[in-house]
Image (cartoon, rainbow, N blue to C red; front, side):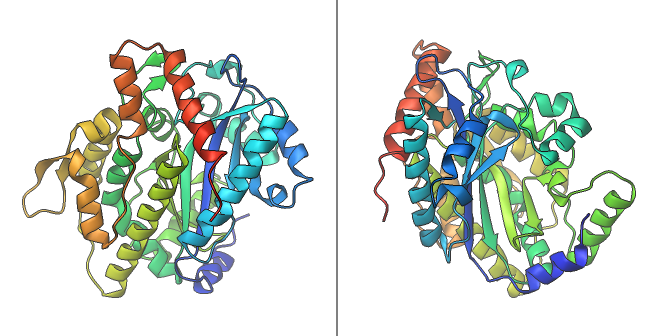
Length: 375
């Protein structure tokens, strides 16, 4: 049951710019690097840990685990919470003979061998989507940012629509699909976003009334029973009173994940400031935003994107993105070096096998997420 009145009240009582982080990791065999169905085991073991008991969550398949920071007062607080949860999760997994990987897709394992976790929610997802759910062997980074006011939250989502391809390009980290070099920078996006219904870049709604009318229509026509069945790349989260940005691939290193979170919060802050100032968001057709989404999927930061907010739409080099995003937000975020996709593609171009590429990714993940110092 979706209670739209309660959801609106949640947003009216929300606190601006609180932050919650959600990161998805692959559960893998340390020797073979193949996915292993160990979620239930780790979830049960985590019940004895006073942090992990509230931080571990399932995410569709039993070879995947999600770690959540909970609500932080700001991005710095959320990062401290997440760092502590990560440290404990990596130690728990190591003690139980499981390694954790962090790329947008698993390069080696066959999706047909994965199992849906045993929860009512995910059984409902499986029943509704069948192959689309079975096929979704992907991992991502989600950032929640508190936005007070239901109308305001929807308008912030509207403003972020053309920003989504930019965030994807700087986070692309999944060139492999089903053991094969896909030629893409974000195979996760092609697999997940282009397959799931009600996914990708949403329409602009203009305010809560239009959003609520749409959700009510979906409920009345038995299209959905939970608002989380709206899998868009940005959405107002009814339960948390946040704008949830869901467009990014999982990141191989902790430094990349933390920098992306900071960047996303800066984007939400800027979007909210424009809404508060009464600025009219750019009236962009979905087809142009989708053009940039495809360019981000295919080429990441190695390609060219369209400047959709210029008086005349022109191309620009995607490697200028961070300068442009920092200029727009007023932030000073530095992403550490080439993206995960660029690093993987460099290894591929040098002749590395999929297993060798993934082994290097796992090494980076193990050496950064599990050994970082909690600040």
